[in-house]
Image 1 (cartoon, one colour):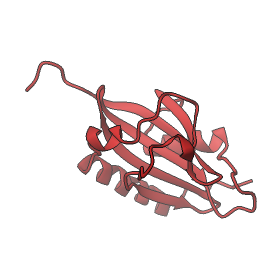
Image 2: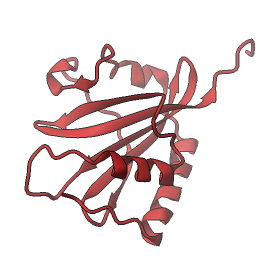
Image 3: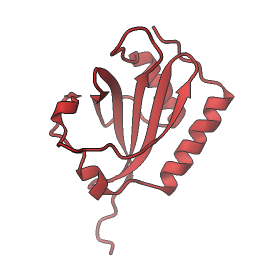
Length: 143
């Protein structure tokens, strides 16, 4: 079991990640490459051959959690995308607990439960919980 520790160093890093993501949102063209039909679990084999995840900024929490954060342009508007995984543990494929996901989401200002959530395989046998929520709705009728 991983232990979640969030201190001032981690909060400062989270603030940096959020500021960076706001200044550098991922375009929908880049995100379109990663889309897989809606399913609760996305495995590596479900991805298109040659797919590469867009780079994201991340923070590692003492105790074994990692969170990656981005803001993405989606048809509905800009969305926050928070991906949470566990690292440095003895059991391959270990997943973060719902309580840890909720606590990390709160630190990032991301709703929990999210508008959309899924589990994704990011390396063989390694999984992350993904939370996607609308951040700024698209403005209709503007050029």
